[in-house]
Amino acid sequence: MTDIDWGQVAQGWLDRLAACSESGPGVTRLPFTPEHRAALAVLTELMEQAGLTVSLDAAGTLIGRLAGPADAPVLLMGSHQDSVREGGAYDGIMGVVLPVLALAWLQRDGHALPFGVEVLAFADEEGVRFPTALMGPRVLAGQFDMAALDLRDRDGIRLRDAMQHFGLDPEALPGLRRDPADVLGWVELHLEQGPVLEQAGQALGVVTAICGIERHSVTLTGMAAHAGTMPMALRRDALAGAAELTLAVEAMARDTEGLLANIGALQVRPGAVNAVPGEVALTLELRAPDDALRAQAGDDLAQRAQAIAARRGLGLAMTRTYAQAATPCALALRAALGDALRACGHDAMDLPSGATHDTSAMAELCPVGMLLTRCQSGISHHPDEYVDTSAMSAAIDTACAFLRNLRPKPL
Image (cartoon, rainbow, N blue to C red):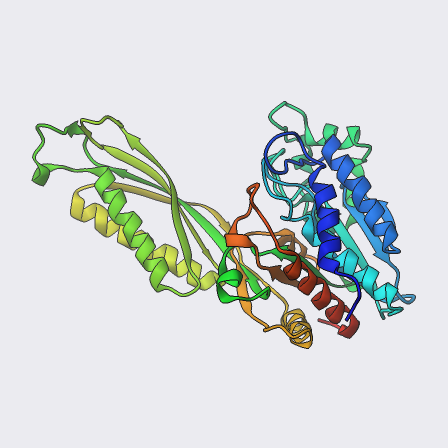
């Protein structure tokens, strides 16, 4: 027990960080901007108050370090400081504040850890300013493509130039790669960005895996015709075929545990009120924590699309345009987080993360784990994004129990 309401403390820091934003609704904080600089100043103050040694690496990652015994491995924690445009005050940045406060609590109680801890505030996870993302963790894992430094934002500024103007040395990025032998693991605290925990009445959940993703470009081609003269039985309506496919996608996902599916964009041609649609181009996205399940769903839906097209006399072109493997969380870290939850009086609820996080890139370096907090109505990437202080208190409490009980052995 503690005489400090750590959730309220976290909210105070998050309120200050939310002010490090462009003007307008919600929080807009892009990497290598004055708003980023202002957030680094607040986070540095927080980390130093917690007794951490603070540094900024060449990727713009702010690092708060609590040293451990000599030659002991280091546990990495944290998340990202940047936001989407007009986003919320918790996504990413909360995952930096909470572990720092957990370390402050442990040090206040005089609890020494048998390993070092570094809390990382990555510069760019969202990929909003530049058409790249997850730069900080990819650098640490040795997976960053240096060609991305020549990508430009919408104002024509290269990533390389933005970093240099921020006082960083992009050419030093390859030297930031960490040795996996020195890293105990990575743990990220993040809001769920969905309603599952809230609906279950749980404050926290342990992530089993970050879902893999695949996307397909689908074009159905029929015959445009005058809607007032072409009989219904003779139509080759591409939109009707697309509608049937959309419902088939929804039905498969509803009937398949763990599968998420979405058709989120359609282009209808010719797009006139009195014309039978002759062509529809659409996007299909599939997500699942198991890659085999996702791949099978993609194959099954391709067959379903072919059957729909054949029955309706439509042409079909379907191409997989993107694939990202699922990221399973380390069993030992999942177990340790579950034990910490139970030790703090919470149910150890397991759930996958449908969103991609810094954790997915850190998995290229070391074992990874994630702890999710409930968020109000599952809203995220929006000004109304909100995590209540009791959930943040529970997360800090659980992080403390996790750190106290973790031992520096292979995970």
